[in-house]
Length: 137
Image (cartoon, rainbow, N blue to C red):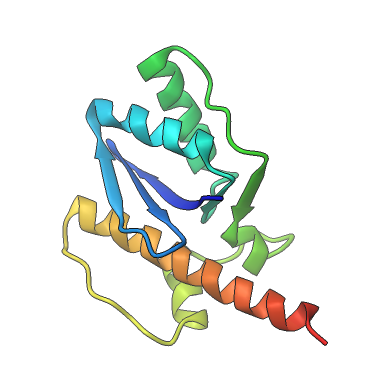
């Protein structure tokens, strides 16, 4: 059962498995591989994906392979989880408010994408921990 965090950037889709997988950037035509990997996942996780990433992946899918993106049935949009019923805060601000550790990434296009995937992953992990406590005895 794979749960994949992803972020769409200019000419890049960054993907990371929540089970300790490494960040993988897909560029150019290799983005087809990212799209197919996301379609095979049990669940996908984004930050603001319902308003941006899913639409971008679908447009890219149509452009690169001539067919629509078919996301898995389960999609967790972290922005909507942390900010229900309002537009909410940016990924960076939400991360700073909720996660007490930081990590440096290269000041590059790919580094920015990797940082977004990392922040989304860390927020997802915190959300899972909070939900476990909420569901517990």
